[in-house]
Image (cartoon, rainbow, N blue to C red; front, side, top):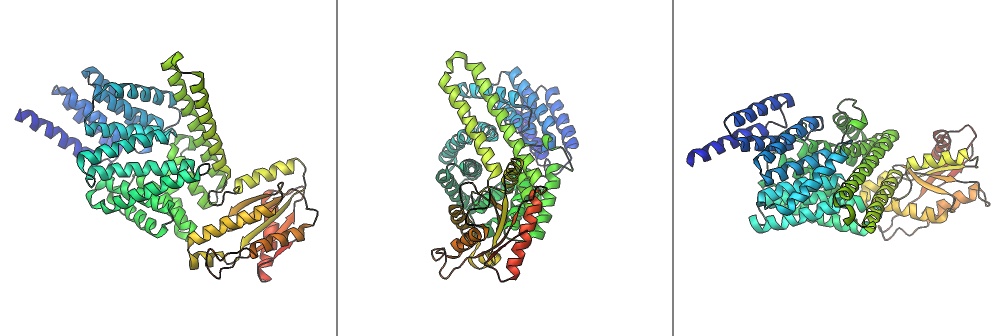
Length: 537
């Protein structure tokens, strides 16, 4: 018995040593080392050890370029456990296979089959707490990648409760479970932020409470687990407006030895670049954005070859760099991928359950998909801070009106001395000012006029046609409605004014051309003393 236990310990030690090299060693070397270990296990009549080696190596290969290799090892594990009749091992391998296939486009059907198989096994298989943790992690990743974050949230919340009861509330296991739950709460908050803001805020506050507990227990973590926790805490604090603390945690994450080649580090670099850009630290932001983009694109790989989270990250970086076309392309790929997986999941359920799925259930599934598509479309054309259309939406509306031959006037304005507002009163106050300005300007405009955020503190108004009262009068109303607002509730003695310019569109004009002419008038207004709007072609 002692020899058997010693042999098992030896296999585990060799596997642990191999897995520690994943973040730094070339994949080809790791594959050769694991293959050698795998064959040794098979030759010594230890198919159980060989299957376990394949499972843990396959699930650890999470870097984007390792997708095919990861799937191949997980398939070895799945076949090995099936031959052994080990339902627990088969469930673990199938769950991780579903999670792995979900994150890469073109594998929706296979991911749906493995997920359905995993759920079948889960209902009939008794799992130890550690095994349950593995399955929960895999299935929650699978649900999250398909946009089903509510289902993932239920799984991980239940797992945290079980872990706290079994290991104690301030244990290493509980800390790791909190980080996973924090990740999913943040995903849920982002998912419903536009159409259910109160629910989104509740998720974010829950994540913030978990982040505080995790920060207190960071000393329990090391390696990749510590890196993951630092990044997730940084993301939560960033979304909660605690930017300085968020930046400190993200920088700490990037300083970790395990950050090299890690997807968590790529996420940290993206978030830090966005934060720095929002605070006007453009040189460092652009440097980080370029570095992150190179890592995400792996040189200049085709966008379609990347993963869902990489598309989302590239879209954010594109907005930092002003690359609107790449932002649009990435968001379109995310939407198409989510549609594919939702339909594949629905087809898998219909095929499996047959007549037991009611017409009402099918209708609800399609309504859910429709809502997701509408939400994605809204996100792609809406500025997340102010809720007004973004530059892409402005360009699209300009093209529609110009094609219809309608008269258009472009008016651009920005907030005077806005950098001083951020520096003196905080970015949170600055964000509140931008939202309030948009609100009062929209109330002043007609229904046919379109206000959109052009970038930073700059906004563009597309006027469908010159109003009856004349352009100068409208411009003056806009200026006065901002100037005369009661800003005292924000900060005593606070005052906000705008400067702007307008230009009528010519037949040959592009969007950029007419905005450039209006922008020239804006700078005239600045030079003339600010708090005024000047027009003319």
